[in-house]
Length: 214
Image (tube, rainbow, N blue to C red):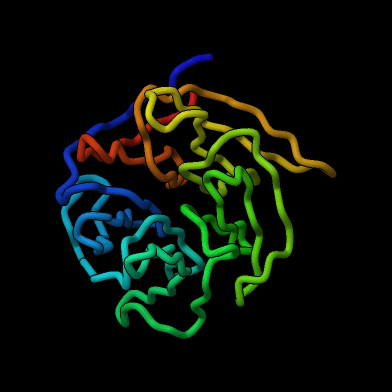
């Protein structure tokens, strides 16, 4: 299997970059060390805005002109989906606890919010209250996800302690078809698509990475 084609690998302006989303013009990254989310210029990675999250921002996606962020809160790391409105900040309106109190990444397919459960190996499409509408089993552990060009693209692995990761594509034509389409040779976290290329984080190296598929 061919490797992803890195188009950029730059130092993060803050430690432990974890979650990632793209809103059409800006890159959003969440740090699990500072417990903040940051709006970045994708060309320079200059910080345009930062906001304290209610917990560690493990996963993030854009929903129209807002963000949804999976936050790990309390000493037990309870997982909640929190709503962030640029210009207003985090609001409790529209928040809910993740199904089974677990979730690591988010995507939005244009209609539904989708929560990924890493170790349970599945995607859960949920309604505005967190009720599960559909379950999509995935053959690998899931450490990143985004919806792009009519398909889910996942960052997956069988063993997170290795440097053996994949980009896994999930398409639907009646039933779901799941294919590993590229190899990722570092411990990547989270996934976003800006219309031309993908974004992820090499969290332990404090780096932000952009790439295309082979």
